[in-house]
Structure formats: C-alpha cells, structure tokens
Length: 460
Image (cartoon, rainbow, N blue to C red; front, top):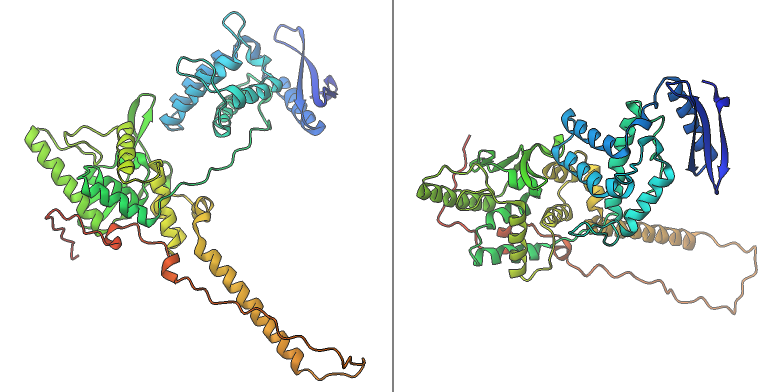
C-alpha cells in the first residue's frame, strides 16, 4: 500500500481525504471523502480505503445504485436466516419508507452506492429527525423520534457494513456519525391498588379477557408471549407456564417465532388465583368448541369461537378494560413493567425477577427498574445517617472526657451555648405503607374467581 497516493486536509471546518487509483480498465480515478471530526479519523479511513483498493475491493460500487443494493441486501439478509423475520420486516420498512425516498435519488438519476458520502448521511439523519414522519398518503409529516432515527440508522449502517465486506465499498461512510440523543422514557406503571381495581372491575363485568390480564400481571410476560402461549404449555396441576414461542407481527400477518432471547425460553410459576382463572378459561373454550363442533384452539389467547386474538384486538380490549376501571391509559406492555416494579419493591431478589421476565442478565432488570426501588434507597439513607450520628456522638464523648490543658487562657466571661443538636425523629411511616403490595388479587381482599372449579395439586 502506497499511502503517498492519498492526502488528508481540512475542508469547511471538517477533515477530509482524497486518493487516486486505477480502475479495472486502467483508467485513473480520484475519490474524496469529507466530514470527519478529527484528522485521526480521516487518516484512519484513508488507510482503510487504500488497503481495500490494493486488495481489489470497492471497484464495483459505481455499477450499482444505492436503492438496488439495499433491496438485494435485504433479500439476502432474510434468506440468511440469522435474524428474526420481524427484524427483516423492520429493515425493509426502513429502506422503503425512509432511505429510498429521502436518500436514493430519483428514477432518472439514482444515487450510486459509491457516491454516498458522510455529508449525505448526516443530512439524511437530520432531515429524519426534523421532518421525517410520513403521513398516511406518503406525504411528509412532522419530526421523527430520536429512537426511530437511531433504528433507521442501524439498518443503513448494517447494510453498508456488509457492502464493505462484499467489496462494494472501501469503507463504511456511516461509521462514527453522531446520532440524535435518545433517553429512555419514564415508565408508566400501575401500583398494587390499581392492579386490584383493574382486575376486580374485569370480574364485575364478566370480562372474558380477565384470565389473560391476570396472567400478565402475575408473571410480567410480554404481549407476544401471551399471544403465542399454548394450552400444552400451561400446567394447571404444577401451577406453571412455559414460554417456548411468541406470536409476532410480520407486515400485516401474524407469525409464530421464538422468544426474544435464549433466556426468554423459561418456565414460570403461577399463583393459585391465576391457575383457577386459566382453568375457567379452558372450560369455556372447551365447551364452546364442543358446541360448535370444532377442535379446541391450541392457543390460550383465543376467542370463544376458537379464532386467535389478534394484536390489535388484544390492545383494543385492554384499553376498554382500563377505561372501565377508570385508570390512566397505558400500554399493555406497561403491565409487564408494573409487575416487575412491584416485585422488586416487595423485596423479591433481582435475579428471580430477571428470570421470570426472561432477561438474559439481572443487570438489564436493574437498568430498567432501578427507579422503582424506593425502599433500598431510603434504607441506605437512614443507615448512613445513623452511622454519622453515632460517630458524632462518639467523637463528642471522647472530647468531653479528655483532660483539659491550660495552654491557652480561658475566657471566663464567655458562656457555653446550650446543646442545640437536632434530634432526628424516628420515621413515623409504618413499614407496611412503603412496602409495595403483591400484584396477586387474592392479597387485596378480592374473592377468588373460582366459578365452582377445584384445582387439585400433584402430591408427588
């Protein structure tokens, strides 16, 4: 590699580099790339570009448009089978809804892959953040959220990274570009009393969905896990459910998939009240299937006629149930957050909560729900204050008992001020008032919804 073929220089308050090379026909070509924040970064990518050219890579970028490359990349991305179908669907949506119309040029003059620059990508991200939202008819709407912009940027970066690996580009022009700052939004959770009201109103209105609402609150399972739960995954004798598949959205279709992570494949214990509610639901579905002359649906989240409940139907019914209970509107996923926050506040060990939620690492659980640990924080503050007070008392005792020296004259006219130390009052709040309650309805004074069913446990 002869690095003298290229140079790094400053251009428009940014750093840039240019280099020359000979194409497959022996003609000399020149390329410039700019928009780097530091000289070291520009020099790094100049070195990569020259190395790629010397290895014969990056020669085909002028022969394919950005749009054609992205579409073929997405097809190969799907056929490779390394990611979930929902991920491929999201990537395809990012390409067709945002990248193609805003970055791909037009049909008369499509942007070639090799002509894509950092400046174009930076401008694209800024436009997305300011006016990237698309209306129903494809017209430009308002600003996109920082999270959505970052998701689109992730798709573009992955595609360009693969373009480098396949020899279309000498380096990835989307590397190390600053993205809009995204802060995780505050969680909207229900407390134990709201749990109880929500479920009691569901019982009072004979809500067919009550067993499903209770299952989510008792276990914190995800929406897709609820939709994909099968009756053969429910053990009413041992009081457990096993999460082994999910029902996901792929475009307009619903498909079965695997849990989000390996830790998502798990078996969760359920309480007696939830067992009884699920048993009642199973009886209803079995009786309806016999009446209609149909086979029982294998899914728990099925309507009385056996048809699977769609994602949109589930959300519509959930919002109707919360409105009947007079509760603030929230997402169904917020019930999962509520269950996790309640369990942690009750002192359930974090690794147990992480296992029930299907988190791969307890640190994920703490990162998401640390704000809902008021008791450990208060205990730490009180314990620290107690230690400080004890040390101050010990220090004063030693000072009072130490022999006085006459090295300095005393001011006999100076009076000693009265002891004005403030005595901290003991915490008047009863421990029960700050202890988060169990999300299980039976502990809120609600009568079990037995419906005449008796569940017998195994004695093995």
